[in-house]
Image: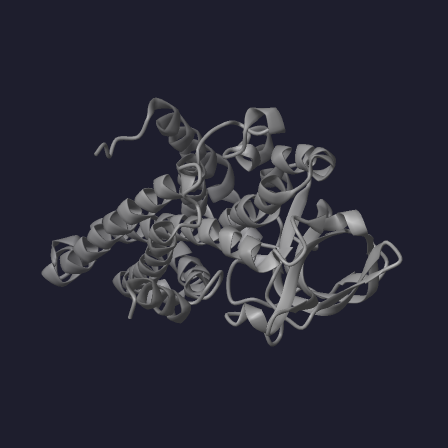
Length: 386
């Protein structure tokens, strides 16, 4: 068992760390305060090849592995989790389903712009009444005259409302399958009549990320916009969410590390009772817990990423278990790290002048998005055979 990164993975880490420190971090406060989407940052991430990292070179990708993507997301998220989720969602939820399940024509049409970062793609699963219970999908798609006619709504959709958003892959009920709904995946390009991107959400965190609800009113797309086989949407999104959960866990590790970095630096500077507060045992214990939990989270995330990246292993029970565990542990560990970072900063931690306030706001959604902590525990228990 080798825990060392390859030279290529090390190079990706160093490149992303330098980019995050030199480009993203100086802009993060302004992006957060003004709820701005970092178009120039996204363009530069595209030039670095980050949007194509885990995809084959013949498809226009960088030919790296899934762990390399997770390392990139971790480092980007240390500077700004909003930018981190932009990358994560664009790759794991946007490009990956088209790459994994698309036809030759679909891949040739969409992937060149997506893997280069020139365009962004979205994934529409969650609905007002169907989040964790994805089988309760209400959006309908009716086959009619060589087209799919879509009616319904999606919510909390990342990367769908930017100037470079190219479209969304949605799940929709296309019929009945035994005793349950037949759920299929459909490609809906931006600008399709009847496809509406509604007003942006007012969010607690991730202010530099683009998030909107969507509606579909007699929205027609060609029959060939079916992604994968009819009725395969449920299986496809389980596959997609497995990788997405590991990537969200990597984002959580980046945030946890950012919290530790900020808390340690502040504790060394802030003096109380005649010495830096880093000398006080109460603070040392918090820092020790943050360091320990961040490293444990990183280890399980990397293990899950390697397992997911093995050909044919993406949706095995072992990989699904690791994905759920990594997402659950890393998201909750990062939340504890943010709590401790704010506590160590004292009153200043409650002020937006210090980045730990942003970290604290950004981190909560990690326990919710792409499967809540409760859902991860249910999945783990089920896979245990409980």
